[in-house]
Length: 137
Image (cartoon, rainbow, N blue to C red; front, side, top):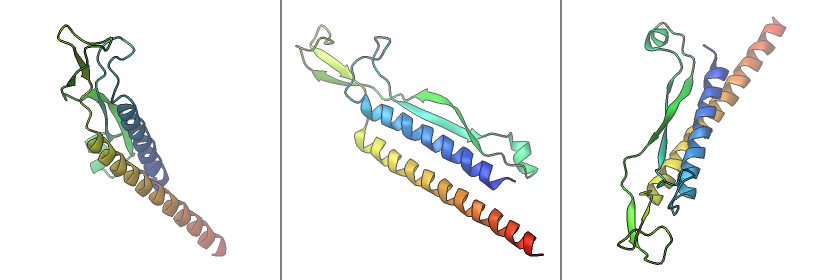
């Protein structure tokens, strides 16, 4: 088991999750994406790098990004007849992104990132101490 590698993969995944959350927050008031459609909020899906049998055998490899999924949250319709993206009834559809929910997820993710950073630092200290003890023997 390589504690440094496991913590590093955790740091990578949580960093990418923070980027997705930031993208959702940045596009809260976006009516169109690059393809011309309505922007849909996304979530990063992560999981173990190794299959379950490898984990049971005691060979964890850390985590990896499995992909991005769009949330099924419906858009919010706002009556803005002068907006260039308004429909025939004068409504504009904005992404159904919950600002408080995204901020809560950002805090949770940043704490997971910090926990991985702490574990990485402690593993480095343990390896350094083991080398130090090996040199004294």
